[in-house]
Length: 265
Image (cartoon, rainbow, N blue to C red; front, side, top):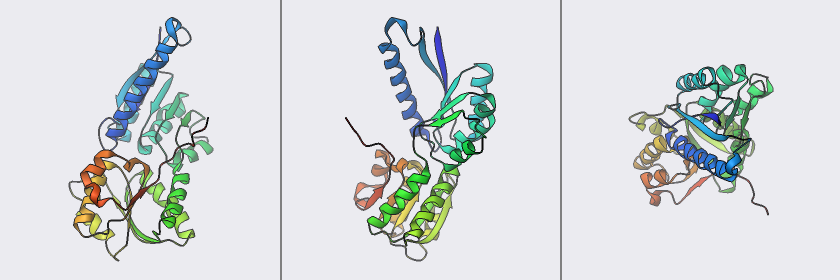
């Protein structure tokens, strides 16, 4: 027999690179678990997963999760990657249906709030910290690096809006000044208008909250428009293609935050 978990992650769209990496990680982990279990498998069975593409869209993710739960009767779902995908799955599918959902990457404080309000019915878990922590850490880190004044450009979804709010609360409490906060919508052909707005007031640095694909275009535009080459970045921006796309010579004064654990014996 085989125990099959569902996996709803973004293989395409703004978060596609993260979902592709996550699916490979799950495949590796399941293969190793099955191998380690020997002939007996896990509880006498093998582990497998049914992979579905959320396309970085909440409505698509809900449809895929419903198919897995209602038709395939999967007992657990791994995903989503971005919070704007995980949240509708929790509220529309796994929470009401009593199905375990575990996200490796959704950091929105909204998910904590859903749990506290009983709207997840106790079925949602995640293996990453909330942006309530990352926003606070980023604020202190910015001040430690001498970034006492900056402009912000943030992706206009649950992650970006909450990350901005958590950062603003901590940063301004420490004496930091935000010149402007400009939201952007993913996958636009140009971000010249957003960058022009963010540059008003001559900010000495930019805090970009978003994803590498759009982020590459936005930061390149910022540099091309004469913006200062001093950046603060969120965890998802730690990507080789972002560095290559912008040009490492423009990122010598780029700093970022990412949650993790201290290694011990």
